[in-house]
Image (cartoon, rainbow, N blue to C red):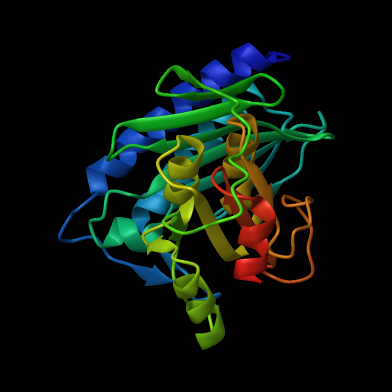
Amino acid sequence: MTDGGDNEITELALEWVREAGALTLEHFRDPELTVDSKGDGTPVTVADRRTEELLRTRIESVFPDDAILGEEGGSTEGTTGRTWIIDPIDGTKAFSHGVATYSNLLAVADQHGTRIGIINLPALGETLWAVRGEGCWFNGRRIGRAENDQKADLNGRVLCVSGFHDWDGAMHDRVADAGVLVRTWGDAYGYALVASGRADAMFDPQLEWWDLAAPALVIKESGGTITRRDGSPEVTVPGHDRPYGLSAVASTGGDHRLWVELLT
């Protein structure tokens, strides 16, 4: 067992999440892959379950007293005040359709919030990670903490979304009238694009903590802004009033307040 400073935990977490990514690639684009539906209607595959089992095994072998929360395996109590948050495959729909934008998400939280966050995109060969107060890295290169571009015009900006399940006609009209370019197959990939400067904003109306813990820290430490859909800064909390009751708007391009107004 080890106490685990930030550097040690980050190195182990990166090693484990890349191992997890390699496991998912064994199932990626497998014509015999079966997609099941969970009780909440979300999809799950054997790759999701195997990947979370692998990460739990790795964590428990080194930090047996830490708590773990995983999308597939639920919650395991701990005594250290440290919690590992696992989304073994974020973007299972993309994964099951052979689309390479799926990711493995791993985060470590303490009493002050998310401490370490990793977005691993194994089919794309990309990994972004952040450490609270220390910055964000993209494939080993540190991402600058540039201030948001505050231009009061969203025309030509690129907005990533995971889908349009919570959009109405008026919202579509507002986005179109603003001249915003919308791209889908979002999930955590959208946050990775924002953090690395390849998109201006990402919007998700319905999320769980395991979807958001790692991406939120990556956005913050890369110099971006992330809030709830209503503009509240308390974007990642483990407890909320209903399943998938969290939401997020992340941006690095344009006045963030304009994105919130546009997507509310």
